[in-house]
Length: 468
Image 1 (cartoon, rainbow, N blue to C red):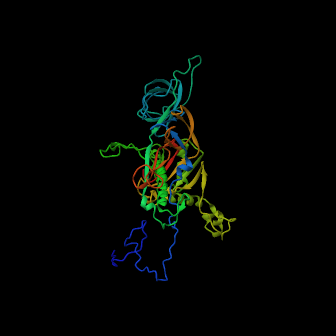
Image 2 (cartoon, rainbow, N blue to C red):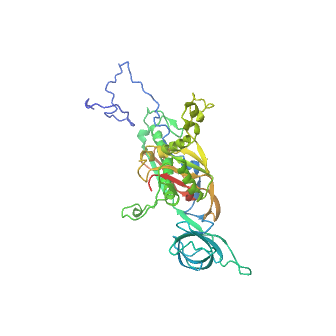
Image 3 (tube, one colour):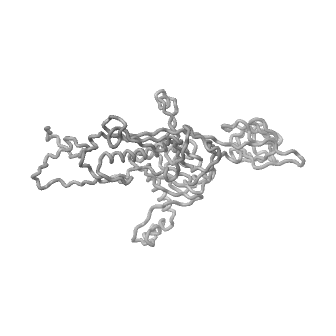
């Protein structure tokens, strides 16, 4: 074959033994004493390229034999209404009409005592005298009517009072549970190589992230396909969204149902910090105040991208009085090796305590340029900088088991039965590489999993992102 000398090109080794203009050595000669000096080992210029590890650290994997996962989460123990309109105020009596979303009848009973507060902070304490649907009539204890007509009030129950010789409390309250569901999705991948290529020789020695080494290029590619698939098993659980079904050519109308990933659930049912990176102590105080109103889990892990990690480090560093003083000897208070100013300084922090324990961990998925690390990091509500995950487990009612069970706040459910386990399936087809299932002169490695993620107690999670 004739290869033109112009235009010029850079030598680029080919993955297969094919004569191309990009891998033709024009100056090669067996009489040349200066033969090319080549490295037979592949150089790992990107280090460890996998991004999975998040769910392995904070979650667990449990089997399920259904295509729908249902669980119940406890409601609040105490009763509070935040949208009560005051009316018919006369002689110490107030009529309150409840308009809270989802309320169909007042969970308030005659004889209970309530605290009522309007938008300006004015309060009255009262006893419930009658209840009808969403209308509650109370009589106040004080002499002064601080609540007036048309006030929108907050009301919560703090106790009860009965006269001597009267009957007990009329009616009872049922436990309030919230039911949530998720559906597993099927994730697939495949790798194929023809039989002729499997017989080629002279491959590069390779090492992959899972420790595999060897000289067979097709095995190198198979290992990379496997690693890529394992990454997708995690990232799909993080990024998945359910199909909305509003668009004619959307996923729902094409037959794809989607699933509720971690980001979707926390963004809709959890807590969202919309200012990107909480960079000051007052920012974290706001987060702590919100957690106080939720489950108040003692230990939490913040999985952060590099910007959020540095923001936390910088915040904690500035809290040190020696650093604020600005002298070299004093700034060594954060140093290693007996805090010697001439030795290395450790400018990173693994965690801190502010009301709760917050441990910090870099999340490679948010830093990797081929994943979320390559997206915009500021100025858009889709820019996620981190996720706060409560540590430990919570108690939920498992409908498959038919009883309460301890479950990690974050865990994966995969389809499985005695006859079929779809947690991580892999099989080989074709007529090469030891397979003998078809007459195709190739080896095909197939991967499949069917799974979903269950985010229990999403009200205990915090998503850090930009935008309201």
